[in-house]
Length: 243
Length: 243
Image (cartoon, rainbow over the protein chains, first blue to last red):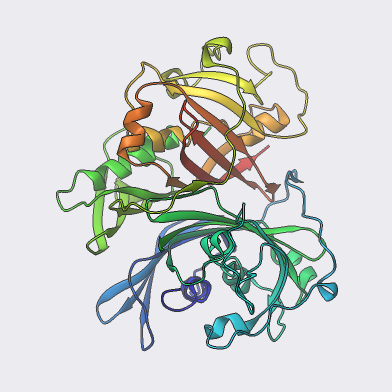
């Protein structure tokens, strides 16, 4: 995987908007484009309120390093209104987190992987720790995940969590040496603060899949469910790959 | 539905980037945020190449009217590379376009609806022309759609087509009088020019669904397949609603 964890870049951009006093309500959707390599070292974020109303705000953000834009984002914030409510998709069936083996610490892996506790139910990497180069029929993954150490869920950590799913190419081909990098990530928040508070620091149930791999890119869709089976967020990203 | 057809706004923004001489390759993903009412009359589009490399470009676009940003967009362009290829999702089964009744012309409906030929296979509006106020269990729609009059498919018309699905709220509740408006739309292109050329001006198979309706917003996911069952585009949008 190229560069720092995309979820932390996304959360850092969103946080910049959240810290403005004129920011209104909670995030509804965030799109982050990874425009260039970030690496380590100092960066600046510029945030601009593109358009704001009484109940909706649109922000545009850029992460700039050494004069180059390394990521940009659009973010929509809204105030909550009580309306008719319905969840159409079903939460996946899953054994409890405590009954699922933890994903082992991988020597040499990127540090962000150690900042989450993962429990793969299906679609993990048989590659680790004993690597078997066997292709799967599908790239679908179902897993439990939570921050490590545990911390109460907020919109920032939920955004980062929407990017914790391994690249679908790794799962489908059981090939972890391919070069991959997210190009564009969009996350939709389906939960307000009260639902995040109800989840607290417990584990989330996540499902990820892909629709098409082609011409050096694939997409990756994710769902994040609370432990009580409330849909908290959905996300889609387009990922560059080179086998 | 509030304002002009979002698909035409999105395509107009994308076209602005496409017309720049320095633009490289084909669109991979486009996010459009509908930041304010557009209405009719003159507008300007500003386009900025945020970051460009040898094989990828990131653009930022704004549609400005009377000094206000009414829509903005980020767009990623890439050059094609031959790689491993696979489509993981199945194309829906559907009777041929010619055997599906055309959606009737609706008096008083927005003109853009007349610019497409629709054939609903399931999840249409029983509301029209004979309105029945019966709620569906799901908002899923499967339909055939093509430009009317027919025209060869390109990335612009494919982007517009990704927004032709009626608001899922209308289908789920069979309630066409709700106030709805897309807030943010992201479309992923899974096809290159050769696959668009192979499709030509024939009908596309489209499927749309929702995951969650809540607090005045719902999401809407769409797939667009060629008549030969190649996945051409996927799309997600977040939509404002007031019952």
